[in-house]
Length: 104
Image (cartoon, rainbow, N blue to C red):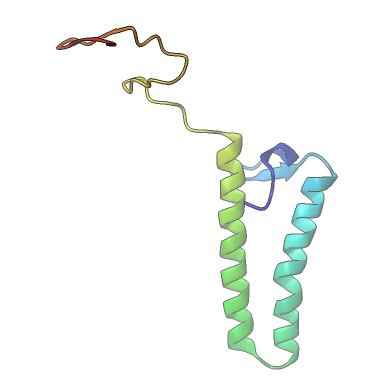
């Protein structure tokens, strides 16, 4: 992911992001230049198939990056039916419906 999720907020559209500071605006500006300038350069040397391939592939990569940013803005909730043992869990006595476990 090239962008940081703190640079953006949810868009008014059903799906998407909009910048909240200059870093987010620079992110969109650089992506636009990355997509459009090689496309125009390829069109200028009469490479229509390559320019279309560039346009489609670079836009797909950009959509993937925006999706990663949007996913970082809205992480998936942890399921309730999964028991996580981490450094904050008291493991001296754990019990389930079928087993009684103790730390030795």
